[in-house]
Length: 370
Image (cartoon, rainbow, N blue to C red):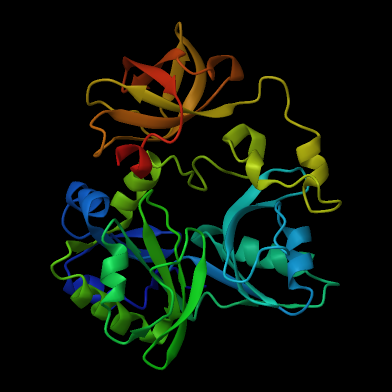
């Protein structure tokens, strides 16, 4: 097998824009174009355009698609109305998290499951295996679908001005809803979804037409503050919004109740993979996910230890100096005795104990800022 990184269908555009790149789940993806801080603020105050073509798109088609997803995933997907989306979890037999996904109902007998890039084959193989015996076909279209996200308060205005984009009802589209659209002669899907904590849209289109769509959105964004944004600012945006990242806050040894994801599990369903494991609960003392706020400018980072009275009681999973809030924030997995709001712990930041307080999530909410 080749060790060469996978190139996005938008790779040439990113290089024209002078992007810096990083290896993300085997893809050569733009990490930034200008500065992490400038791109972060562009999304919070105006708009940013992201290439998310590394994400996986797995389709289920046929009259048994909904029932297959009800068995394969933690939530009830068969009852999602046409044009709706729902967050769900792919669990293993023990009830631990193999991936977190967003499921869109794109037809009466068609669903699109969007999985994380690093879990593409785990998710596709598991869904395909679990769908056996149901009247449906599972199709991994990840190689032929590109994903462009437009996020920020000006995103709706920008999309309304994209030349060649034909869509009805975009201005009325609610959160976690999707619409069919066309860009020129190419069919596509627009979801009012995102991973930034801002209003925004995710555009699913054939890879062959992605570059033309990116350029059209960029032209429409002139005068509206649209900036190309990389994965670095996407990470700080999602952290502020209290959104977990697989491999950091979620993994295959953690159960949903440990990471504030129990809402994504429907135990009223009679049968789904992982049900018995979830029902069994977690062991006494199992770590739970909390949000931490500290003062100053020194932020805890992934894998930094969390202490109380000199004893290690947890680990930082993600952390940063919040560009929007101006103080350090972090996710941490800690012993449950230290998870109560207001609890003060210490983060070991390169040998210095930095006090931090357990606070409610999310750290940032655009509604709270309005």
